[in-house]
Amino acid sequence: MDIISQLQEQVNQIAGLTFNTFGTLQRDAPSARLSQNYPEPPPNPTEDAASFPEQPKQMSVALVKAAKQFDALVAALPLSEGGEEAQLKRIAELQAENDAVGQELQRQLEAAERELKLVQELFGQTTDNCLNLKKPD
Image (tube, rainbow, N blue to C red; front, side, top):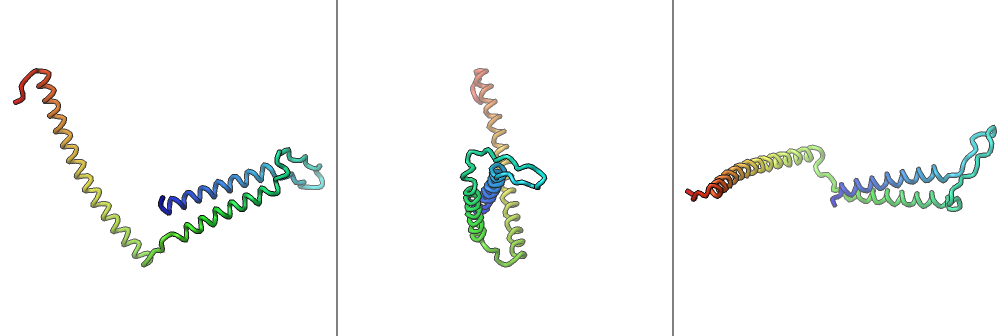
């Protein structure tokens, strides 16, 4: 897998961890009293209420680990040499190469289509000859 794909996977992993972390915190956090004018909120009926203080720590560790892996992948990216002008020149070279390969592929496709048409015509003649019990010319 190339470095860009790895970066995309790591971003997806970080997003998933963040989503799950917020969801878990929202679901399992104890209720808070917003004002003295309101009654004490009922306790949260979660099964793992005793393990709640450990959950944010574990999720934070996972997020930090994923972020460090992302940073390591970014550090592994090759540095651009020569600045923007060199990059634009390289892009132009790659585009010219791509155009040349595209033209060659188009020529090969046209040749293959001509050959297919010829084979289909020959096949048609052969089947006609066999069905009509004619000897080939």
